Length: 228
Image (cartoon, rainbow, N blue to C red; front, side):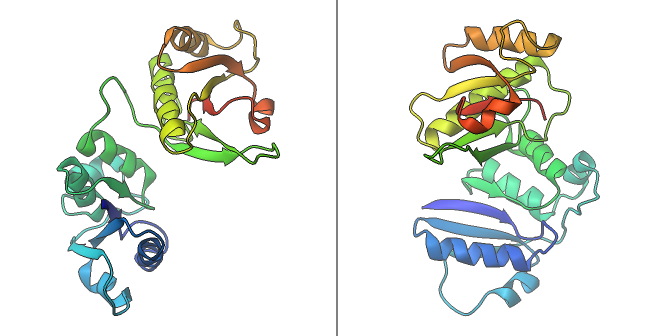
């Protein structure tokens, strides 16, 4: 059974939309349990009568969309996102889901859950469909977490994107490309050139080199590495 900690108070339409999503999830998948973190009275009022693998953990605070991320994580000790993140850290949950303050979620991942060894900063990852007839998806990482990425962070994005493509998309040997302003090895600025060298030497991934934005929608690679 996979336990998923859900920030029930995060997002524009919380907690109603979050509770509806949790109900849809447990009705679709039989191997998950949802832990809803937030105001118990509000959440309970939205849950229909019945026996669902859903548990409510009461939290007295929530992080707003305009809260400063790091300050909110450190000061709002009983915020739904903070308590949910700590549950993952303690092994009480296997994953954390939140539709709330993105910066705070990234801060929670860094300060509370912790990073994978060797990874400097977390990233936002998304899957996008390509235009080939097969309709396969590709991974784009980073999608907004780090606007001023360093070369080592791009290297970390490649490793995380590669693992995601293997485990979630079922790619046995994902093709990893570095988003650049040209496909030639010599293209790019100082950061992408340094990242190119790091990725070329990385044995854990199948690095195919630089890729241009015009090509990523036609299946040039399975993982597109970029800054945020």
